[in-house]
Image (cartoon, rainbow, N blue to C red; front, side, top):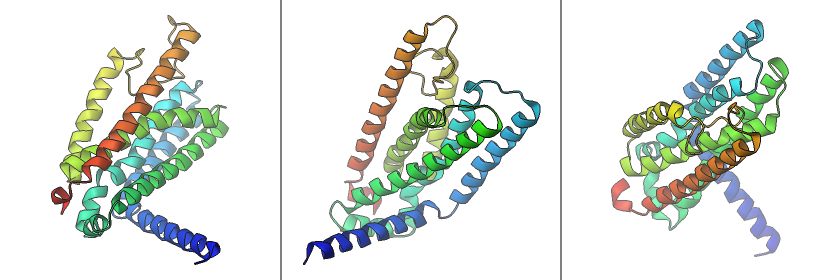
Amino acid sequence: MSRKKKISNLADIAFKMIRYNLKIIFANRFIWFLIGAIAFYTGLTLIYVFTEDVSRVEDLYGIFVFCGILLVFYPTVFGIQNDQDAKTIEILFGIPNYRYKVWLVRIGLIYVITFAILLGFSSLSSFLVIPMPVFAVTYHVLFPVFFLGIMSFMVSTFVKNGNGTAVLMIIFGLIFLILQDTLEKSKWNVFLNPFSTPDDISETAWSNIVQDNRIILFTSIIIFLLAGLYNLQRREKFI
């Protein structure tokens, strides 16, 4: 087989895998979470535009984080169950290491879509509400969103049920929110707002705290992803 033919075959396989996973991601109830994110963002943006109640980027950070969580919630929480319901989980386990490739592609697509939508939100807010560093804001928003999304994926590989995973993730989310005030200035705060510099902390010290926080979240994301993929080795638990 010629090199050109091999490249063509690989491109065809990649295209089919992406198309298949896009169908999985956008299937069932995802559209409602997408509509919810758009409606939530649009509603608050209109309020801010007409009331001019927002003057700082930090005021918008939480909105973007919540919208991002809505976008990744359904595909990461219900992905395993959707594969089981559609009987595609048996196909994934039938081909060695294929499930890893499928789920890595799926997770990648989820976050590419989420990044694109959040980038659109921040760009629109920069135009309508307050000028902001669009890419920097989106970059920081992705850390807590990715953290909770990959954590949802890992939990789903243990629970194997979408509703059960959703309940656990809501509980975890509430715990993180409850601890937010206590850990407001701590590097361990999952929802740390890098644009909200405390008055009693220097900019240099705050920058170090934010950097440590991002390292902690990124490390956790890698650990959660590896744990989830490792748990997918246990065929008998899913079929």
